[in-house]
Image 1 (cartoon, one colour):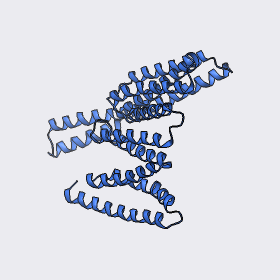
Image 2 (image 1 turned 180 degrees about the vertical axis):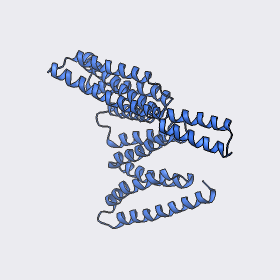
Image 3 (image 1 turned 30 degrees about the horizontal axis):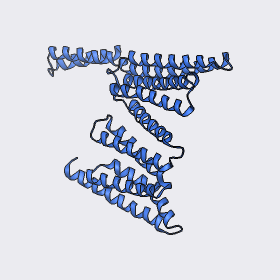
Image 4 (image 1 turned 90 degrees about the horizontal axis):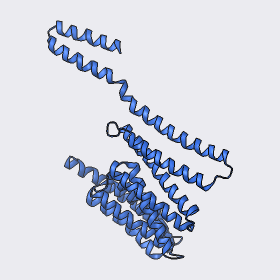
Amino acid sequence: MPEATETLHEQLARWTSEGFIDSSQAGRIEAAETARIGAGPHRRLPLVAEILGYVGAVVAVTAAVITVHQVFRHVPPGAELAIAGAAGAVLLIAGAAVPAGRQPALDRLRSVLWLLATVGVAAFVGLLTRDFLHMADKNALLAAEAAWLAAAIPLFWVTRATAQHVAAFAGVIALAETGVDRLGPHPGSFWFGLTLWLLAAAWGLASWRRYLRPELTGLLLAGAGLLTGAMIGMDAAAGQALGVATVAGLFALGVLSRRVLPIVFGAIGTVMIVPEVAHRYLPGSVWAPLTVAVTGLVLCGAAIWLARSRHATGA
């Protein structure tokens, strides 16, 4: 940027002549600002590389799928297996080749590439077990989920990135739920909900204690898992009790810890769980909307209390 450099030189010369700074200071300022101005355009490079990486990955995968289906109307299982394996390996190597740790954009690019690689690994194992080892569909699904988790956990350990955090959580939940389904022909929705609820609670505790990073991502996943698990199990009376206890527990946790996030999930649970329970036991009554209205007032009071307490402590 010659115009900016020339303007800087003129300003420094004027300040030196007027005695504001000496020539040594002017030289150091000019050198530092020239280096900063010269490095300015390069700061956009990681973002450009990130966008090009996303577009390239999507275009490559899409083109590969379209090409295979146009050339082979009935794609041989071996070709599908080779494509899935090659995609997983290439994406894994591409992610490792990204110079992560230098710029946030490059970290995100590596994270996305490794997330796609995790999908490729799971697809490879699923095709292998179903089409070549001739496992039953449920067993092949279990193997694919195990492969997903086996790939997601080490990558999460390396990156501590949001995408890998979500992938690891999803792998744990999927594998556990499929395992519950394999325990019996009709385990019942309550057991699926309870499994999700317990795993989400454990995940949230680990994130709360900062064993799992990013902490906010873990808490969001845990909150969503708690509410989803409680709602899945509400066909049974025990599930309804679990749902109400979950809402109450989230409110209590938010108030005691003076954190807003549990209260937000408690409010969401109030709208989604409490009216259903009230309608089930008190059909046609005004208790359901009244309960939600009272909870809203409690939330307003909790919000005011949190704001005042944080202001008083300077938090």
